[in-house]
Length: 297
Image (cartoon, rainbow, N blue to C red; front, side, top):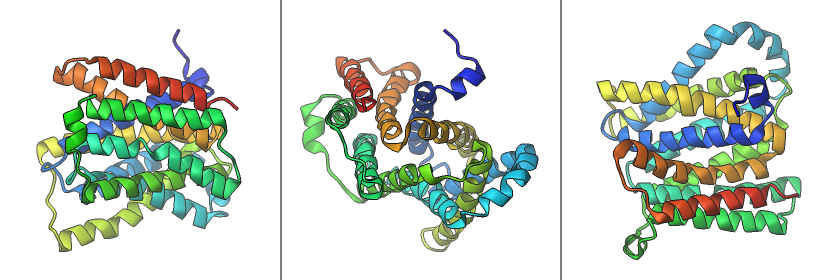
């Protein structure tokens, strides 16, 4: 059954699933971008493209919402810095130092950080079902990321890139929990404000990259990657996630990130011709069970 755009906007589970699907593509793009564009430059360019698009097509509604947005400048700065600049900077830096398996495993720990922060900040306890949901989700992520291969598990080595992924995961968990305090404006207006913060806070990183390790303009392939990540994981997925958190809260929404490595594996099957293994089916089943359990009150 097809959902109309209006019905989709009221349906948190399809929205969060679509967000995870697009972020799975971002994981693939992050690996493909190595050598095609400098990582911090990619962060600035993606948010710059999104901001230009938003200002061009949403400026009237944004002007109307601006007085409300101005009441919470500190919160907007925190959300833009952690959820957009922090996450993407750590994520693309990690892709240069670690494997896709390690990135997926570390990212699978995000629901743990979301639930932990929600408890510390909001006083929300993790119920038995939520706890089981986290366990099932992490198990499914680990199964898919390691391909159920003991040799892969034995040779996993954690390095600087994995620390970057921990930074990315913690950054997005902070964003998810504090997103509940968002100003009461339209999602696109809120998103425009956060993208503006992301662009401004990413520029020092790009300048620092150029001054230290050096930077370079994108190759033709790099420009295509930049355009695609600007449209899908940077724009549509973020809007869907903001709406999903608004509808069901950060803890229940955060568990959906465990779909990212599962979708990533499926994309490898569909577009790269990799074989579909039993561990992928079992991983999807575990992650899906984790999501269902985590929605129990």
